[in-house]
Image 1 (cartoon, rainbow, N blue to C red):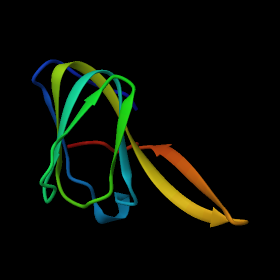
Image 2: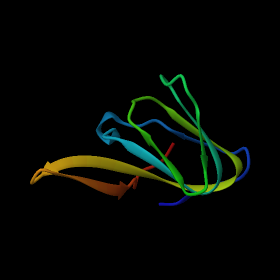
Image 3: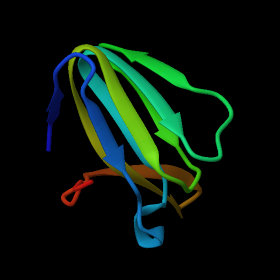
Image 4: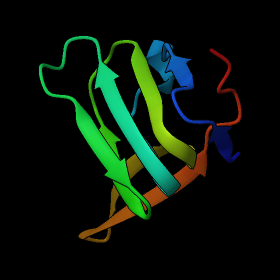
Length: 95
């Protein structure tokens, strides 16, 4: 599900423990500012960049320009001595 934000609009997500394999924010367009409870460093994402969140805690995403992004869960499995990554869209992204 693609999420659209106008300039200065916020998206707040409090992941449930079952959702926190790893969460990837993929910025399709615009400029995003990402902050997370328990993480001392904020992140900036430009178009076509992504950031992997692997800590628990509330996530706040602010659009510094009109922006669109996706939240994806990542799970990593080991099969036949190769790492395989599966990306799935977050269906329930209600704040």
